[in-house]
Image (tube, rainbow, N blue to C red):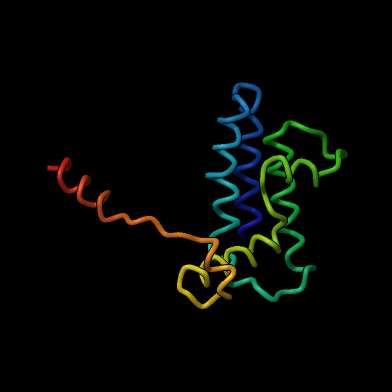
Length: 130
């Protein structure tokens, strides 16, 4: 179901791609396609790569759509230029990030992540929303 929905949105973006700049195409693809791939993808941790390959194909198709390249061009440099991890590594990265935020990751990993203090932002939102 996720792949079908992602391909539906991909075809819709592909229809209007010639009218979009690269930045706006990337924004639409991240919102409609990559957002759906990332939603609850940590539940897929440990699945064999055979089952993850369909989702990887969706991501490859989205990268080709953003960069406007042929389906026969190599995809690895495109994913690298977009700063997108391959799908199975996205899952591991997401899990490791959550563990680091909650302090259950190894110390050398937790040291790489810092959480911003949002109390001043909440104060500003409350102050100006009245």
